[in-house]
Image (cartoon, rainbow, N blue to C red; front, side, top):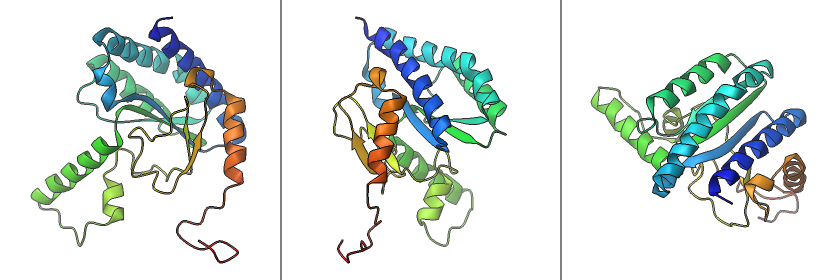
Length: 215
């Protein structure tokens, strides 16, 4: 089947997972929709992904608002079509007052690109006259695409791949990693719960000692 059929199925998977995340009370969910590396794909496929993303945002706007979900799109925006940017701005503004859940959508996103953009932003502010006592983690985080973004607790990688694929490198410093053979179009709410149950069994030490005194 054409890859576009997989992308369409992926949208259905997202809606399924989002509904289950809401039911489970997960406050923040981030999904990787389009990476900075995805520009290497065929031009027609990239255009289709842009169109699909825009249509999905428009169709889901009402549900997201009524379910008290705040939407934030993270990534580089300068290369995106004007109509898509307008849609992104509209849905972010429409859901900005929602507090119960946050859906971060990484679009034209790359973890390394975000860090590069942070460094560039710090330099620009310095050249404008802003003084920094020191460049620490707090300063870096204030220039991230979404400064309100909490640190990632659980990072799920689908499709049998065992790599981070340039996803949220700064925010995932202490994330627990979960790998599944399921491809994203087949990933659903039950798979999400399975990952969360596995996560609950982890002993998160953040560099400290466990109860037995070991590392």
